Amino acid sequence: MKKKFQLTVIIGILTLAADAGDSVEPIKALLVIGGCCHDYATQKEILKAGIEARANIAVDVCYSAKKDTTPDLPCYKNAQWADGYDVIIHDECAADIKDLLTVQRMLEPHRKGIPGVNLHCAAHSYRISPEFAKPIATGSEGAIWFDYLGLQSSGHGKQLPISITYIDSSSPITKNFDNWTTVNEELYNNIDIRESATPIAHGKQGESETVVVWTNRYSDKKTRVFSTTLGHNNETVADARYLDLVTRGLLWSCDKIDPDGKPLTGYGPAK
Image (cartoon, rainbow, N blue to C red; front, side):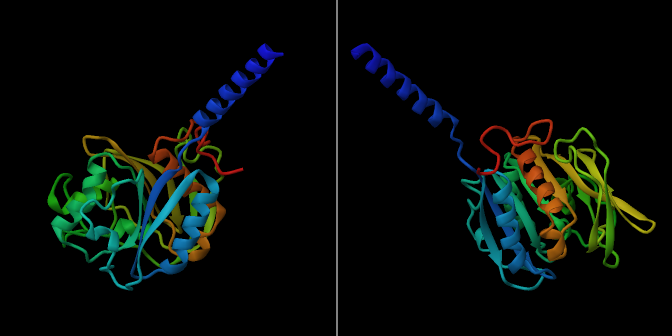
């Protein structure tokens, strides 16, 4: 009986140890959101709830209620603003924040390897150069935000439905996703696509067709950066297909997704 009891205790201890080893801390994400032209007060709640429901990700929010192109984002006031986070989600609309030192400080964590996810108007933010509607050479001061994104965009046309076509069948971000059509949305133009970027979806409105989803490898660290220009209206942001795309893009940026598009062990949604 004594040996049997000891064996049971040992098995119990090993089981507890295995369970402890299987537990995974959530990915810590910071959602930076606010500025002109969007219902960010609602969208921050949609994104946080939608992402956390789809994967083992804890989303903190840095929000500015200021409704212009110079949002007062409180997290950026701290020099170590990205410390403790595994990934930064940029969803700000900040076209008129143009100070070079400010943008360099914002990009420093990404240069050092912290992944980035960029949604919609983030692609039209931090326009250092007044010549942003023309291709700006990689590596120049005016291109620092575009180099991080991997794509330079300057504007969009009228809001109309966008037909989404996934073009990279090898990408785990879009594996087994069906093409779809949005509600009225803004199709962002493509002024330049960097060599470091990989397009994974096209969007089409009438005769206009551009890259609307892509990945980038940024800086000498080859930091993983995922971006989509979709996501103007609340109905799109709340669409399960959009939230699935953004969540997979985030998991890819953190290297926590398998080739079939499934979260790695421990990073799936709570049961």
